[in-house]
Image (cartoon, rainbow, N blue to C red):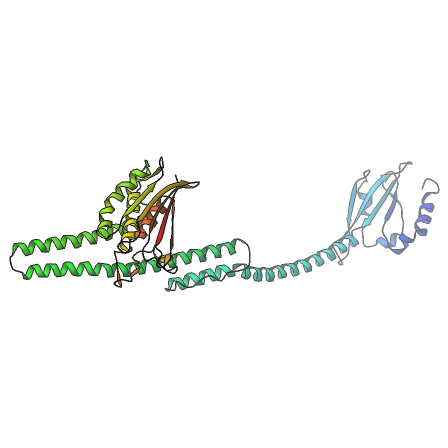
Length: 406
């Protein structure tokens, strides 16, 4: 413009290949008072009311919008102004039609992609949620089966190492423990009912005999003595059951104090020596000097007494002495009771700690005691955070160990 005026500007625009391809620019020259001097390629901008530019005084670098007068789209001509050195105005603009067309195409493409992605997400989410919630459905089905009385059902285990897989594993473990507990309770109730039947029948028979004997005071006295013995036996069995249950549920009341182990073992051995002598046996005790233990004195005396009573019952007369030992190791205090009795088969060892389980006596094919002594031993020791162990072979006797923390 400075070199050749308007004609030179028009000549340069005609030479431009880029401009000849499309109409990218609108160019208007106006006088200092905004009267139109020249609009280049006026016919290309016929859809706009260019007369409006004369009514809007231009501002330097300000944008003016002229709406299109057509039904083909809601676009406009955007024009900015610059003052030339001679005071006239140069206005350059561009139509927003192509920009709006690109935006419309972009929005259409975006909506198509968005709809596809939403549908794909919904379908994928449906299948993924079904797969993820499959363990929950199995869990619900298992609970419904248990509610119907089936305790043997389990939730199918998955290979996934996630929270749901861990939940399934823990739930199955809990079901196994509950099933074992329920079966144990049923077995215990059956055994208790069987064990109660004998003393209750005896007590009933004693009462009937006394009633039929007339008014003989001696008969009444003997009947009352027999009745008292049976009731004591029954009470002892029930108390033992209560002790075992309290210990297994962790509510056993322990009166713990520190005492020397020999002060607990020797008095118990002394009491059972008389019982052993009556059965043609003897007891030997070896206790480490200065061995102290923090525990319930009476409960631990009961443990030793039950083990000695069990050893005497199942050891034939004139056998080797029954030995009771106590010593310390790295983990605490160890008590052992060894006998040279008939021993037990390996298959029986896991069951001897169960309530009311008794090993058959080969000599008379009878069962001795209530079958609660070893169960009580295990319960008391576990209440002290200890554990029990046993080693036995048929014909070679048995050895019981009690491990207790200091």
